[in-house]
Every structure is written in structure tokens, then in C-alpha cells.
Image 1 (spheres, rainbow, N blue to C red):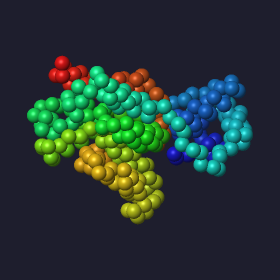
Image 2: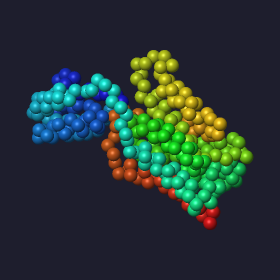
Image 3: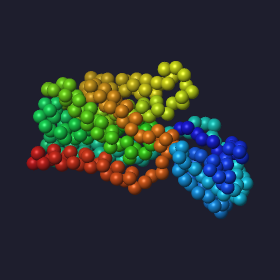
Image 4: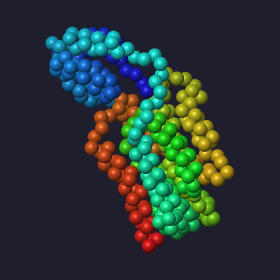
Length: 306
């Protein structure tokens, strides 16, 4: 993740607010500004957190409290120096929220009561083209066996955990489902007959494509040369080839999923990827959309199976 300038690295002439000299503003992502806000609040120093027009968040303090605020921030930075070691990737819970869908539906599929819905939910090219619109969605939640499920969960968690470092998964989970369903439809449209597929891997490859596109967008413009500039896309593409080729793999579905995932990676606004964004009630609504698309598709499938 990109790091940002702290107070002790900013000269006095640089921290004067451009509109008025009565206050100063420090720029950073939400996590950094929130941390500095806690430092100032602990010393009862009045301040405000605002969104700057350039994208990041702004921490503003009145001129009369300037020296005290700077002193407290500098003291905090001295007592909490940044670690020189690269920390391990944090264990995040948000990927598990995404993966709970294939877990629940696959366990239900493996039970005696759920096995009869297998033929209703699997991605069947002929039936999709005949009007079974729900199959590209329901097929994402079905798996051939426990090994198939576990492999998709492990690879899915790794990719989604990396993706969660760039933006909340609530804001990209629903577009990834839509893109994955479109990928399954494209497979049916390409092969048209005698083809069946199932599994969450199409979603995983879609998320991998989105990750590559996001990292590509965040590459510093100072990097010269196409190979270095496109390194994130090349890296994720090679990983997709490594993971997506197998005896029973839906190679075409993986290809379409990865390609459509690249388009999904260009949907979030770049400034939110750089600076972060405070969670809002809309995130809860977006999670509802993610679960709802599966529930609606399966509700239609179950009605036909009764």
C-alpha cells in the first residue's frame, strides 16, 4: 500500500491551507488521518476531518493550536516509528463473507435433500440458451466434490484477501458476481451444446482479473517501459494460467472470467483506491445485493424443481 507524508515531514510553508492562513491541513488516507485525529483528541486539541477536493482526507487545526498539534504528532511518530520489516498479510474476515455463499449451497448440494437441485442449478449450455437465465449464477455455488470446493475456497480467499487491501469487498463483490455470470453465459454462447460446468472458480478468476487491473491503475507513472508498467496484469495473467489449466478445468470460463474481471477492476474510482473511504450504510446495502442475486436465482431454480 502507498504511504503518505506525516506532519514531521512537512515544512511550515507547506501545511498552510491554500484558502486561508488561519489553519493548516495535513493530507492522508482515512486510516492515517483517523489515527492522527485520535492523537490530537487525547490532548484535547480541536480539529476537523474533511474530504479534500484532491481526493484524500484532510485533518485541519486552527492556527493558534498549530505548534501544539505538530509537537504531539511528531512525538507520536517518534514513539511509533514505522516498521522496516514487511508485515505479513492480515487475516481479513470480509473474504469469508463472500465465500460463505458457495460453502452453504455446496454443503446443501452434498446433502440428501439438496442433490435433486443439482441438475436445476448446473450451467448447461443448451438450457441456458433456451432461457434458463439463472444457471450462470447458480452454477457458481455448486461443486463436483469436496476437493473442488476446498481448492476454490483457498484460492478464492487468497485473491480476495489481496483485493480487500485496495477497497472494501462490499463495493466489488456484486459486480464480480455479475461479471462471473456473464462469463458463464459467454461459455454457453461459444460452445452452445454438450457442455456443463459448475464451481466458484469463475468468480475467483474474475476477482484475479480485477486485482490485476487495480494494481495496474495504481502503478506509479514514474515507471518507464511497458513491461514494468504492465507487470501487475502480466503477473495475474500468469497466475491465472497456472491455476486455470487442468484436466477437468473450465478453461474457457476461466478465460472469460479473468477478462471480464479486468473491466470490473476499472469500475472503482482511483482516488478511493489510493486514499481509502470511510464505511457508509451503502456498504451494508451492497452486501445485500451480493446475497440477493444468488437467492433470487436459486429461488427461480427451486420453483422449477418442485
